[in-house]
Length: 154
Length: 138
Image (cartoon, rainbow over all chains, first blue to last red; front, side, top):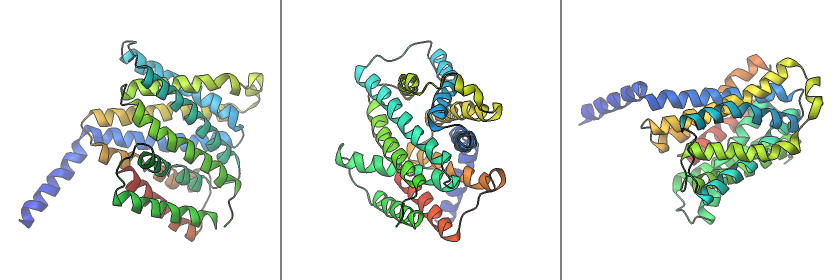
């Protein structure tokens, strides 16, 4: 039984290393890590508003590539479009505050880690607004997040 | 407890992006993840007239302007890679926590690139935060 389990674990981990999704996830991690680091490097001199302006210009080529990949066809759901645009506005506001944090004297690692905790707000909103079920693992996550924030504020 | 300015700014980002996470769920109920990203950039573009720096932008060093532009490219490429990972058969319950670990790249590079360090207590905080990110994204 145990050896069958071990064999299964080996096969699963082997699959993970061979799986395309794993390597795309790693590309995502490297890109987002690079994004945070370059944001800090640029923010040392450039104020938050200009950083957000230039950041948006940088996203345009990738957006255009996606648009070309979709043959210029976009879904026309008014709800989807409204939520998508609202996402952009709020992401922009969040980005501005992030660049302001990097522009200040704050520690880069701490700022990056604290802002990466945003799923805790999503979880809280999903529970209160979307009435999603509150899972034990999420409660545990919130406790760890709270401990981290208290430590950073000491 | 003392909330330094960087912590206040980070809190604004935390709340704004937390709401974005919820809206993202709602938006992908109606349109694909790719379309959602394209409309998100549409939202970014709406803010551009308010942020337009004019000719002042040319006062900054060429390198810093490059970093700012590249940060946008990398952010959007990261989002594309995430969608592609999910489309290539990756389970959201594994891909989301895995990709949420991007601060690790920053933590590993910062001492060499920016020569910044953190205290032992802050290391404990970072570990707690990374565990929290893993649990909350799962």
